[in-house]
Length: 106
Ligand SMILES: [Zn+2]
Image (cartoon, rainbow, N blue to C red; front, side, top):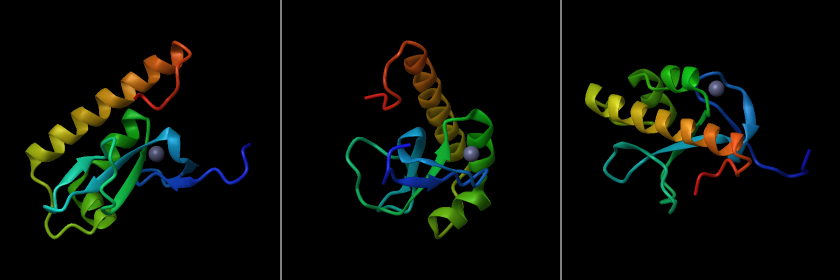
């Protein structure tokens, strides 16, 4: 195991994993939840395993409010969009690793 690799905790199952194997969500300046993009804005973030089961568990309004300290819970629509985007991303990661690529996806 590489020494000093940053470990982050999945907000659904609370397992610690290397940061690059987790998807990061963050709170934007508008207090909305978004998937972390290529440029990190430095807002408060949380991590989820690249697992559809964990994504489902993490995309609960209560879970998100607590993890990201949101002023109010995201709407059902926002949760749905976020779940779809996250699921698409982790599927792409799975495909990339099957093809021998990196898990980074960029
Ligand atoms: Zn997890």
